[in-house]
Length: 336
Picture (cartoon, rainbow, N blue to C red):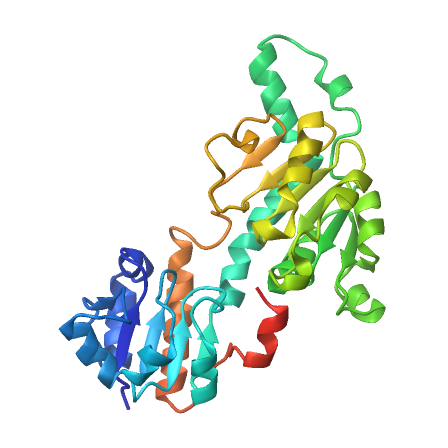
């Protein structure tokens, strides 16, 4: 049976998420109006209010409004939320869990481009590409690059992964191809599992002290705020690089800026706190910082992969099957 479905996400997202083939498939799987996208559910217009009242499934993505008790009261038939993106923490409330709404997320799919970005950052960091590019632009003359970059390269270097999350595990899998030593810090992973992941389990302090690149993949929870602080940064060897594609709050930015200003370490940052650094932030201008605007996750052509995953989940729901990638209330405390 084709369930009634309402799209709910930020302005402009649906058009980027669903290409022609995805829209055709969505209309085949569910009773929906692909042109009707709810940006607001707390005080919706008449068309959205009518669709919400009938909806059995909400297909959401970035910018979707929170599913509060008031919203759920206006959606008496809602049974499932299919989130075509990663974290559902800002979307799914206790009221959803209390009602027993089934929730699916494309977090596993979205992990792939983040892991790919991270791999590129690690390999470039060990080759000291950021330093070489800056110096090349400055010198504009013949130079002893072999001498200046002596010690650079990916052969036999040590990479520290902080957090065996979905993304962390994908990065670990990608790193197996290279001649690198890999350390892992994750309090929920024992020695045997770490070995299966191709890594050596160590304490966070040891990981920071031994790694040429430290890459952060832990979830954003109360216990991980400023997980990488002044102590951890001071332990990193001279010339090391910090990569953060998780959340800005996991790194003490003031402590990081102090280390970066000294020139002792470098950083590749796709996330910061606040998400958009203030206009006067030194992160924009420091030569040893590669700062990107939270683009490691799915974008461009990669959005279609998340759309296809969401449609797979809608199809499973329509056929009476459990979600392939369910989100459970008890697991949110250890996820992004």
